[in-house]
Image 1 (spheres, rainbow, N blue to C red):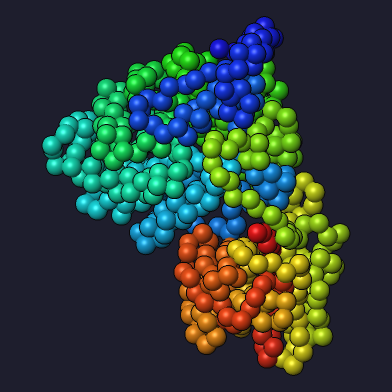
Image 2 (image 1 turned 135 degrees about the vertical axis):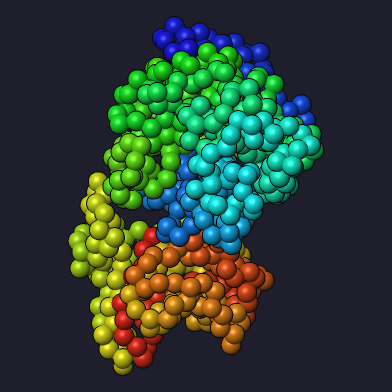
Length: 557
């Protein structure tokens, strides 16, 4: 179903005709009315499906970015915003991938619910996948990635997909646990592109068995989630893999009554690789009028091909090096990923839709005003003073340094370094801004090179501390009220930690997240008399020496 000039002309004619007919369009007019496979799907699901039809008609593509597990520093979505000035239209997560500790896994899933809800309310779209661990395990999730890629016999798989068996009941309990997180998203009104059991035709996970039994697995989950749990916020996405040895295999297609959208997971060494063309043709053949996208992709195709050759309606770039190999480093396998120039060019192309261009779908959107941001990369050279900040250097130096050392298209990635060498004088950096009231968010990436106390303090316009965070010893610590100092996260010197603090000047309370996990819930301001927030101050403790790095500062309201 490759696009041609004629098809574009016909599509344009159709749009004009429909405009004239007065039919409703999401964000204008619509040429289609897609039918969700779930007859009880919410109106928001209907609206989102209609939007995918609109995108296909307009020869556009919805940008998407997967966010990896915890403990990697700040999110890829924030990096893309810093790089391009745009957030991806869609954010993606996996309910297991790259998180091995059971305690961290629970926190990661809770983070997904919180952050996906926030992204939806700010105008974005959400997609989730799930690398489920092998149901043969004694304890679900305990085996991590090694369990995902372990084997299962066809006999066991047949038992798993037969209601009433012991293995079926174990599987049911596991998927019911995931349903709880999806219900939380449903209750917040979040539409989820749900992509379970993907790349079934490649056979890397325990479910790579016969096509007939795979279809039963999918259909059993669909029935449980739709008819038992009432997950009417889900859009069901079937996503086979596409590589040199595995074409999109129609034998694994669960059926048009169980799939809303299709996708191909494609990794390649070249943007013009035939896999993109072949995957497009194969999905069109299997799915008929249903829309499809690049449901997981490493290296992006050429923008011109998106407009002229393909009907992909979205892409979801995989994490870290695939998102930007110059910033995060080259990925270890599956292709080189996108460099900084490619990402910037793709996001700035008219074909690519970003979060600010997604229709509201009836949502009451949460606005976000950027009060201040500094990724430290706009300064002229390493060693200069960070001019966006007011610095005190009587007890040391405050400079911009090439740390991390990865190279961006516009120069090295940099951070602010505070090197305090005196125990009697100061080395600090401050940023003042117009006083803000209500809910204000502070985000930054922090790193200490030693165990001495480092400050991250937010003041009001009368010099009263609303928030006081410290890095000391092996912990991130924070004041809950004037005197209670809590150790909320263990840390290691030399590692980066992403922190986010959401302060409410009306309630005098705040939540604090470390690497995406909530560590402080409704703690009290250090000084409850603080009436606003207007200044951020960072530095090494007055009576200590030490080295402190800070990067990727965002202050938003």
